[in-house]
Image (spheres, rainbow, N blue to C red):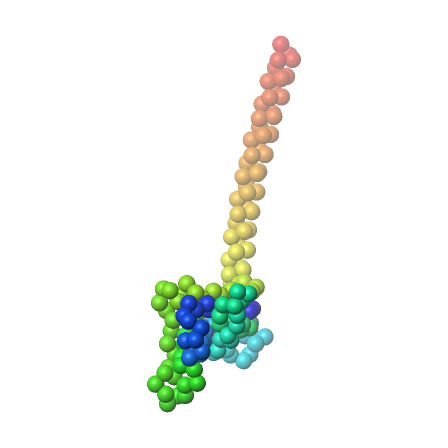
Length: 161
């Protein structure tokens, strides 16, 4: 599956060059894929975002990450001072979790992942719905046949009179 995250900041372009943007997310691979992908993926991933421009020359930051099918939680955009090293004060990532910033974050997953367990539940639900429909159809068919039999009996009585 491919996760694509975009962040469209509202800040002045000159200020944006002072920062590096990252996406943080928690990921858990579906258990049924463990044999196919034996290398465990980190629970929490931090990936740098690339700066780009849209058609109207607006700045945005984007990253695409591929993972085996699984669950994603807490997709967060974070920022730190550009070029900061571990010893510097601005090295720690600061999450952009205020309401205005969250509105500027878009993300999408293609194709939508579904675990074997979730698929099993969906299949069971569909099977139950089909059984109910079939039962209603049988009941309706029985009622129709009873009505036909009643009408035939009435017609025969009218003919015999």
